[in-house]
Length: 314
Image (cartoon, rainbow, N blue to C red):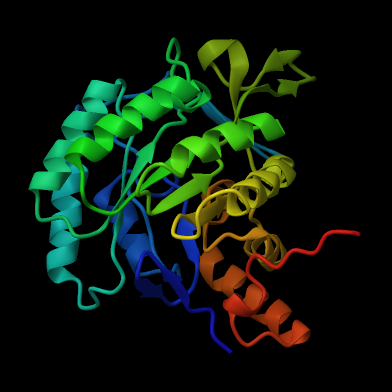
């Protein structure tokens, strides 16, 4: 049996990765991911300059997941690009590229970072985050369809390396259709569905108060709460996007069964956020074993035997 996954013309030992933003702020955390059982890993979504992010407390574990309003804390574009280039230079297996995430505070900032990546020797895969729900005063670009189209048009006029985009959750068939129509016009490598469900609220009833400080307690919801929404978005885009645009499934992956469901909906790679934050990189060993066990019980020798083959009721 094999969990090998072909993604962006590369072969990974398994489909598991961290979600950008979790256990990837520093080079030490990135190295820990590199030495874990994860099939791949991605850097922290970065801006040109270092950002401290929102005031604390800004992350809170809740029974079925998490709420956060981090505000894009990161150590700056140059910090992560330097790490990425050093990692590639030392990497013994060029068939397992690093994923590099950017999330500029403006379209111009994203274009500036993409221009630098284009000029650099970076050979990995870039993720453009169009869905940051937790920066006060900054709306999510990916909810503005016209702006998304114009942004991608500018991006692909200057960028020729493999590029994926991270999307927020959508909740309406018309929006799945509209966004897929836009994305199908561009040479995207992948779509990552989904980022956290924006602007939820969690209350500590003992204190009669919110649990995080920024935005009067409003924050992105992650974990088990959002798995049905994540599965719906993975499935919706898998059935609407052209075959060469692959899907990374993100949201609510806590067990091997959750992973199996994302793959069944059509995801090729899987990112783990909330549960990685709770358990640490050891989760990749556990969840890999759990997925292997499920596949064994079902008689599957490879992920391709069931990926995307979700049945509906006639």
